[in-house]
Image (cartoon, rainbow, N blue to C red):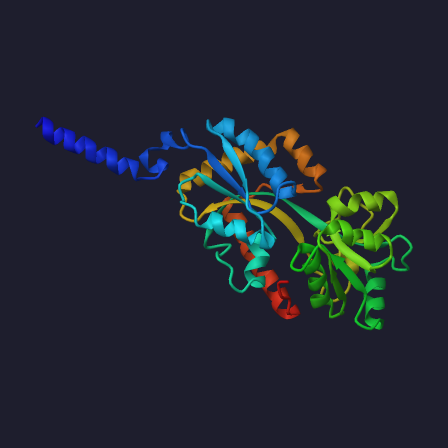
Length: 330
């Protein structure tokens, strides 16, 4: 009898050792093991900063530590692929963006993950609209001015971006696609040099995030033409939306760069819900709300089901734009 008891005990122990922590009982997650928050971009960017802010507060709440792991490359594709292949046991979180989890699947022909099927959404941290800007000395004051001028210029007006496939680039392509007006895209390696050339007059215009363009608009170096959000921004109440232009085809125009958190597909629902709940509480604090708005972001508060629906719509929208415009990865 004693031998049978020992065998059963040993078998139970070995089975438990091979199961994900959550399968051993809700109380065992995530005690005793750190959670990895994989950031598919280099340190110092918005996704990285948000991960560190959230991770610092999430660890103590869950009784463990959250380790930030930066794996940059190919617009977030390299790190996202690594994250998608991690065990779905609650110990891997992935910072996702409009590029890594909506655009890249249509831009890179051999993407190693499916942005929807390979992941389960946890949190939509916030969205960040872009603003179309021109040099302060530019003759263009409205979106109609821009479109009319581009129609008459060979190749269209020049528009800078932070690189092929970025939200700045695809905002331009969406405008061209919906309005039927051509532009010449000038890709740069980052927003910094791109917007400086708009300020200097070397490039006609640019879509950029409110975070980057805002200070230059306030200083008078740039003129804001239109914002890509569905509604006017509280920080720029006098700047109309693209949709407000009254131009045919643009009535539903909207581009929102966004930041989210995902886990590998198959992660147990109770873990996803716990992460969603705790991160939601963290993001709702006045301190975090202030930081998000300081980044030029609109904080979001969607259920996981609504995040999935939002992501699906984003994937479909950008697939259409990329195909219509014939955009290729550099």
